Amino acid sequence: MRALFRRLDGWLFAVMLLLAAAALGFLSTRFAHVSDWTAGGRTSLSAQSRAVLARLDGPVEITSYASPQSDLRQTVAGFLQRYQAVKPDLRLRFVDPQQDPAAMRKLGITVDGALIIRYGQREQRLDELSERSLTNALERLIRGSDRMVAFVTGDGERRADGKANADMGTFMAQLESRGMRAVPLNFSQVSAVPEHTDLVVLASPTVALPPGAAQALVDYVQRGGNLLWLTEPANDTLGLDPLASALGVHVLPGVLVDGSGAALGLHDPRIITRGDYPAQAITHGFTFTTLFPQASALAQVSQRDWAVAPFLRSGPQSWTEFQPIANDATSDIRFDAAAGELKGPLDFGLALSRLSPSPDKSEQRAVVIGDGDFLSNTFLGNGGNRALGERVFDWLLGDDKLVDLPPRGAPDRLVQISQGGLNAISVGFLVVLPLLLLLIGGTIVWRRRRR
Picture 1 (cartoon, rainbow, N blue to C red):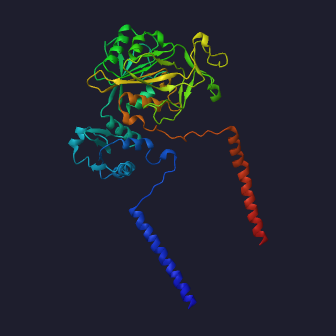
Picture 2: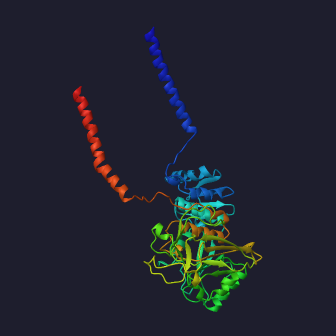
Picture 3: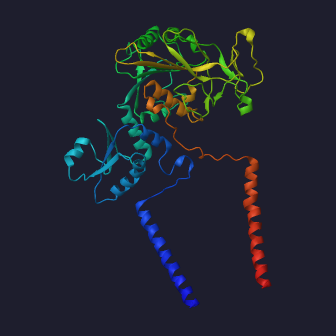
């Protein structure tokens, strides 16, 4: 009798185990849970893409022109599932390109698998299936249209399409993928800023601007145009006083130096690093460290109906140095109040806004930064330089929904190991681990022989 109960217990356990497995199988078809333990969730949808989706107020429709005979439909559907998990009203439909070749020609689609993304009355075409390209397309839909950004040229400014170290080609190439179009603006060829220009950038001229060019910039500001002015030390001799007066700011003489740079491993005192920022819309929630190779301090000299908010400020150990500084010298400079040098903290980034004089706009915005190197091809990759530059452009263009998007990339792509840590890892793998394996193997052999 006891043996019968034991056998029944065994059969009951087997039945219960099968029922539990069947229940788990059924639940797995109804519910799904995915965990991503990588930094920033990079194997799922990035934080930047999720933030863009959160700013889309209505439904998004994506049409994929993919042949049903290929595997593209399954690939596209699987890729877009990550977006649909965050935005359920993102709809996907497939169209066989062979069924409507006239529509394909009208849309200019020549690639099998091309996507047409529609949001409201706007649409974007996408030929590349990647998170970066799709998220950029969604950003362009939020903007509504490409923004015209005119770069002043002809006076030694940084070029928007240049590849030289001092130019801004790398930065602007990234902005163009997000819906900004850079065009040159040479006042030797035109007498005024063209209409429909969304933003004018004056990026660190190296020679004096002709009086007509400076006046054209002043007229543009007075008409309500948005402006980004990247100035440099000694730029106060380039005939830009009328522009500074129109903005109510003053570029202070000298170059900003920071006495605490040596503690951070910086051998050039002219390099300013910042990790904390005054409260302003551009820097709201921004915690990345930025680097500015040579900066000028700025001061507000008059209101002129502008609301002025600093968003870049040097540390308490900084000052405006008047003496020339050698690249490898850090100990032969001293703060000299008698010479007129000013002690920090000092502002070197100002955001200005006011009611627009133009009846077509509600608000006019301008930004003055005492350094343009931080966006150059050489220094763009340092810390949060690129992310800060994107925020500045988004704010100036009035795209407030995009200002505080999290930056792209992951914080753990670069492994930094000290020499001591590297030595410990080497000894551990080359000596300690083999000895441990030998010890375990020897112990197992000894115990078996004792049996």
